[in-house]
Length: 172
Image 1 (cartoon, rainbow, N blue to C red):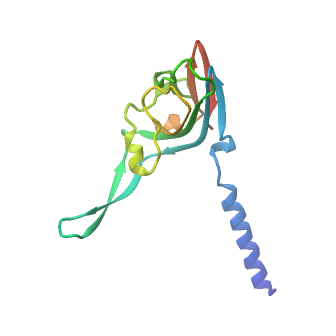
Image 2 (image 1 turned 90 degrees about the horizontal axis):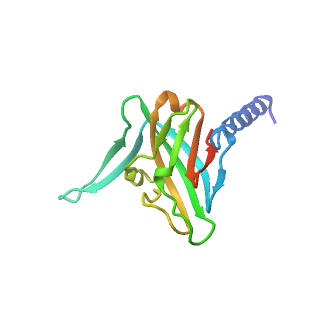
Image 3 (image 1 turned 120 degrees about the vertical axis):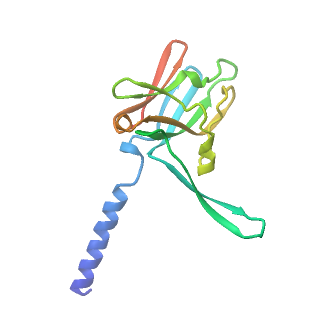
């Protein structure tokens, strides 16, 4: 191999190694799980983003297809925190999983509830968790929180209360 080619191959290898080492879950800690009562919660992905973008196709009356960009943004100074979550009931019967018992907590102890209406997630290609109480089986999908940008860059924990106990899943 010529010297120039060897240098080029070496540089390419270093670039690939550096690029690939940056891939993966937040802080290398996901997936993470916790069990509380009859429910097992597993977080497989975390995404903090200032907006969600998608393209939508529509056909006009003349038959022409038109592409339009759509965007969802949080309130000013905030970001979306999307959590991909599997919630699985380990035993028949027993208590339902209720969303009002789930929250995200930042490093300062501030608590944030799941967005009341995160149905927009489906527009952007995310499978959304049901927003009704869960009573059966395995439930997979994403949920969304809206946090102040500064708080979202610190330590985040997903918490769930059941029967007087709290399960905590560190997210980053």
